[in-house]
Image (cartoon, rainbow, N blue to C red; front, side, top):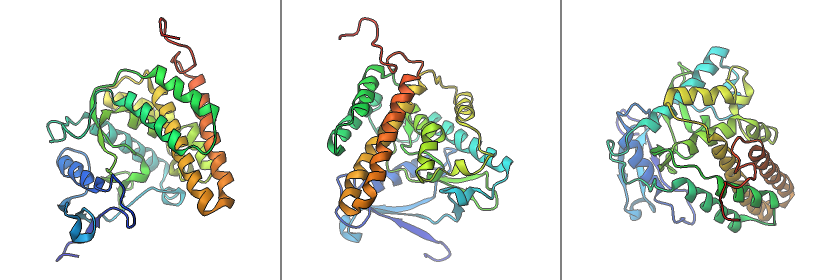
Length: 312
């Protein structure tokens, strides 16, 4: 506490410092830049890149007194209209973020937007190679189809990287009014539809699978939340963006979740081997879901067909 103000210090977790430990400074930079842009963010107070002060870079922000819709208990009290309106607020805020001109807010050098989506595919293929505990043909097939189906990037936008109800805070007395978007450490410049694809993945059939496996999907716990088709339609209408290739981004997001889960499987197998089979089954389920989404896509390359004239 500083005088009448409650403040929060954000720093990397204790323990071994990863290569990306200074991502807290990235968070600070992005939120400071977005202040006054129409995107709700916490107020930044100060930052420090000298690791000798607290043992790592850190920043100071105002403390927010709101609610995070992180699990079923947090949303059961919402009535039908509140759940619907909170969803529209979530989607409309994402569309506004993607409409912010990075140059105008001083974030023109935040990332490398050219070739962003193709690099994402290659990055997560490498991650799979590093994380995998066994061969999983479904994952290899999904990766190959994604490589063939990479769309033209939809122009540079500020991408949050992990946008969902879990990473937003809401006013206690106005449950459909967002107080702030949180957790900006993965923010970059890239294809806006990667954010949309991940959000739709949590909202659609894959989210249902995760819900059954006890992974928090708060919008599953209240019938007032619209379905995934309504979510995508709202984003398309609000943003004016073409979602013709959205299947690609949903498959990519599911692929990412499978890779992340395989990394978790490796850690669980060492620390709590009795839980490893359940995590392994989640990976298998996500891999199969990604392949099913690809097979049902309107995009020929995702269905397994090569572009006309493509090399064998």
